[in-house]
Length: 153
Image 1: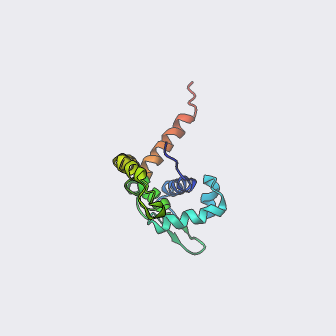
Image 2: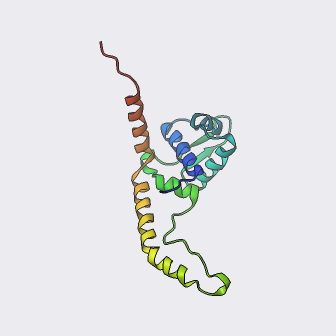
């Protein structure tokens, strides 16, 4: 099972919050933190990573805040994960060579599993690329409609 760091979850929630408000005025960090239940001490780090990753932009001043740089349909979860975690890597984790000598068991294990890890990472990347912020907005709205009871007379 894939483990998703909390900062990635917060990054997705932050970008989703901004996707709901795309083409409106910028949103302040404390407002995003409150709406998405993100600790205020983390929100600036999350916003900084998203900004460095080219997902959001900021505007200073009394009417300032944060907004998406691109249409929500153009921002994939892969973009957000890379902004939060760095680029996806390829290949199996490397264990190194203790004491300057090759560890033959590790070399064989890596060779055996390398293509499997590559396939896992490719599949992960494909799934994350296929999901956009716009898709999440639409899914959220669908879930909200299902949650609201319908009363018929």
